[in-house]
Amino acid sequence: MIWKEREGSRTKEELEVLLRRLPKRHAQYGQVEKDHYAEVAGQAGEERFDHCYAASRLTFPHLMLHNVRLKSFRIFQMDSVMITRWGVIVFEVKNMNGRMLFNSHPVQMLQMKDDGTVIGRKSPLEQMADNEWLLEEWLREREILFPASSVLVLSYSKQIAENVPASQPIIFSHQLPRFLYTLPVEKAIFSLDEMKELADIMIAALVHFVPKPLCDDARYPIEAMRAPRRLVCRM
Image 1: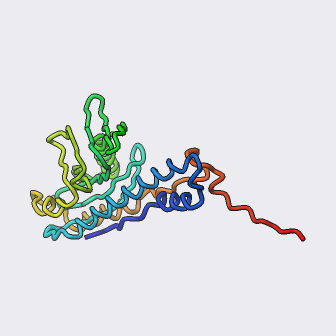
Image 2: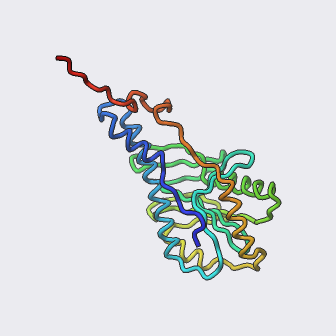
Image 3: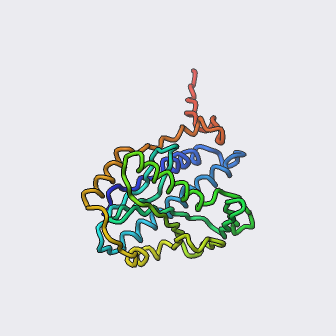
């Protein structure tokens, strides 16, 4: 059961407006286009996850919350959170092209794009570990003892992940229905009412993301976001 729907990306909408206003010959047009593509890809990956979840016919009680943003020691965001009778499962959805090489010393992910470009990024595994830790602290602050685990979800099977630890659950979106269907249903330690109470507490504590206006973002040209000047004809 979906307890909280997924919202669209406000940043994506703002970048679309900027692309319409920014001349293609502008020096920063290419960067804006890349940022917009990343937002579109991220949203498409989440939508595919949602589609595959909808195709899952789960027989055990659960509550699904999308785009959960909370604050513990700091603010943290989780793509999708499933509350079950035996614990919380956090899904981190990634939609990136090329190969993803997970390094452990230092902890980092190298994205090797199809055009040969190599980009160093924060490892999703580190992000998931941080989120799991922050979620457990957030729960502990409220004297709620729900065990948490994490699953990395790659949107498409064309994505190549290398050096992922064997202990880290990782699936493609199309594998989600079977993954959920074959979850080992452990002994229930929470009632449905307790699950709903936790879901409601999460929703009440949500930290809503309000991005600063793009015209205040140093990455983008402020003049592109200003209202066009009106021409006045004098007779």
